[in-house]
Length: 295
Image (cartoon, rainbow, N blue to C red; front, top):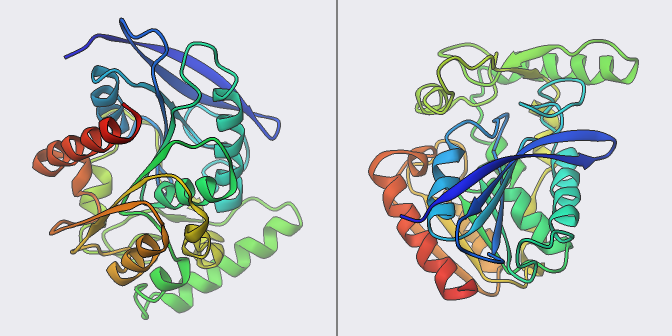
């Protein structure tokens, strides 16, 4: 395995400072660079360093960052899951990566998982200079995903979301709900979500797992599938046949719109590509894709 170093980065986006880590492979003068950020309400330290290390050991630089309001980044309210804000952060980080002299800016790759998988599709559709994208079980259609939300929880969840949204207009503190929980109103309700999500959270983390409830409503409007046809670069998309959050039909539909797509469907759940056997197999496929398209 190749050697690498990790350096802190402090990036700017909409007046906020984004905490980030720069993985620099040794003995590679101007490596290709992979930009990474987490999915729904995640911080950069949640399992993603394993993927970043695999890329760095293979000779790729990695910029792994937190969204505003999350992890090591500034921004309030804290833990606000906002697709427009996240996409703006991707755009801002991309602009700063393009100015670096120590990486090959003609070979920039966007990597995302779950909600950030949707962000890489959106970003690649809107921005120039992207060499390739990788999306693991990407959020592609908020409306389709909303149809999977348990009907018995919907009235209470909607009420809390509307109260939080109304309060945000007049400066009130957010009304918060859990990202995951074993029962009751929460954002991610699939049978595997509590265990799968909590396995990502490092021991000793200060993460409390409560987000402004407005996301229950606003996420429905985020539909990267509508922009997928504008992605011009090669794309590697993974679909999960046992996904409890992303309808497989929506993943297939979005992937089919991308002109240069390599689409894989595996018999896995939403979180399986971040650990164990499926993590190792997924990394093997991702490295092969990268070697094929960016060297």
